[in-house]
Length: 144
Image 1 (spheres, one colour):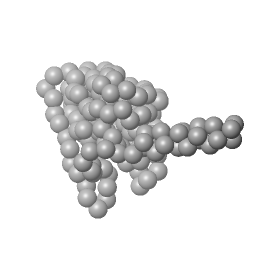
Image 2: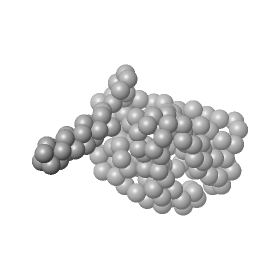
Image 3: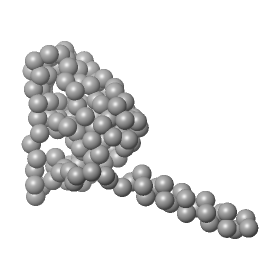
């Protein structure tokens, strides 16, 4: 009897794991897919920009903000995301602190509509954030 309970628990765990890792909805394209590059950018005239964390992409993948501005990261799905400074480059995660960028180290998202603000960006330039969980999930922040 205990063996059956143990097998049931293991199978239940595997079912939950598969369900959590599966994707629902329409297929998405990855911003850094070499065969099919998607350009998705937005400019804002205010001091902040909203960026959605979709299943495996940022939307938009690039934002332009004014110097002193911030970005609002909003989890659009129940997917777990861990965001930090750096980028995915040819399938390899490259974590790097960028001079002038706010430090973002393992900023975690796990619930739908969870929002966290990154900033202010007080230095003009181009900065990168990426999701450590989803290869190719990169965000470019252009500060003017």
